[in-house]
Amino acid sequence: MSILSASLLLFFVIDPIGNIPLFLGALKSVETKRHKRIIIRELCIGFIILLIFLLFGRYILVLLQISENALSVAGGIVLFMISIKMVFSGSEKIFEGNLESEPFIVPLAVPLIAGPSAMAMVMLLVAREPIRIVEWVLALLFAWIISGLILFFSDYLSKLLGKRALTAMERLMGMVLTTVAVQMLITGIRESLYH
Image: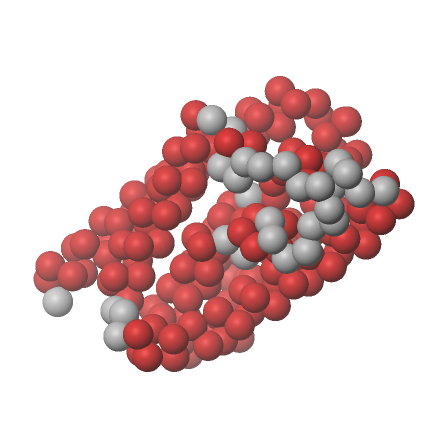
């Protein structure tokens, strides 16, 4: 997998387009002038969490005695569930609940940016090819920058594209993620059976 394909995969997993309505909903009760500052803070926290899992995830796997194949299957299942909800329900149904105060870490940084599928994905990249860790850090950084720009301008993009266009794009991303999830499951199961 190249840096570009890893970046695209992480971008789809983070799903910034699907997260636009969730970010806007979570920030409804907060003053508009504080939105940008909160988004930047939550993006940074999410990135740090994903970076920790990228750098130290393999040690966590060894400590918990979890194989790469088990991680691939588990990541595939979580990703499949999220992608199915994206395709049929829309992201608003994934994390329901109204926030009355300013969001901090939950739900913006975790699980919307650093969700279980993103954590599993970065750990899987390193587990498969640990020698390329610098490339995986770059791939994560590229995906995070693009996702960050989309979420930073979420208010503007929501008005520009409209709800229907955002929903259509999110469902398209959900379809792509479904195929990635199925491939992760197939790979994990096949390698468990033949190794």
